[in-house]
Amino acid sequence: MTEETPGFDEKPDVPSGATPDDAEPKAAAPSSEAGAAPAGDATAQIAGLTAQLDQSRKALDERTADLQRLQAEFQNYRRRVERDRITVKEIAVANLLTELLPVLDDIGRAREHGELLGGFKSVAESLETVAAKMGLQQFGKEGEPFDPTIHEALMHSYAPDVTETTCVAILQPGYRFGERTIRPARVAVAEPQPGAQTVKAEDESEAGDDKDNGPEEG
Image (cartoon, rainbow, N blue to C red; front, side, top):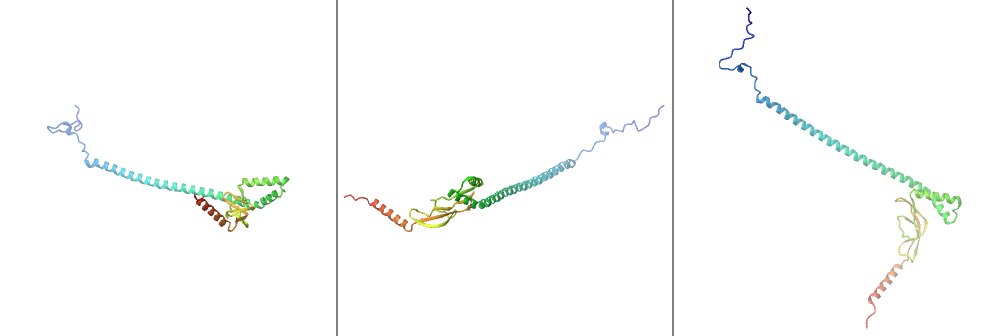
C-alpha cells in the first residue's frame, strides 16, 4: 500500500461559511499617502525645471546683449579706422600737392609769357593733369567778391565802379583739395571810393522824392 505524505496535497482548512477566495492572502491596498507622494515629486521636478529654464533664458539674454554690444563696438571701431585711414590719406595727398604748387606757379608764369613750348609743354600739361586727377582745384577770378577765408589781399586800392570789396587782380591763384584750402588766392582788392555810396544814396533819394511829388495840376 502506498503511503501518502501528509502536508503537501492537503488544502488548508476553510472555516464554514467562507469561500475559497478568503483563504488566499490579500495584497495590502495602497494607501492614499503612497499615491500622493509621487504627485508631489513631479510637481517639485517641474518647478525645478522651470527655474532652470528661467535661469537659462536670463543667461541667454545677457549673452545676447553682450554680443550686440560687442558688435556695435566693432562697427564703431571699423568706421573710426576707416575714417582715420581716409584722413591720413587726404593729409598725405595734400602735403604732396602743396610741394607741387611752386612748380605749378612756374608753369603758369611760363604759359603767360609764351614760354611753354615743345617737350616742356607736354610735361607741364601731364603734371597739371595728374594734379587735377588727385583732386587739386584752382580758384580765384577777377571781379569776384573778396572773401578773407579763401583770399589773401596783397594790394589795396579804391575804385569808383565797385560797390563792395572786390578782387580786381589775381596775383597768384589759390588751390584747394576737397574741402581743404591748400593755399589762398593772393589778390589785389579794390574798395568803393569813400563818399561814393553817400552821394549815390542822396541822388537816389532825391530822384524818389521828385517822382513822388510829380507835376502839380493847375
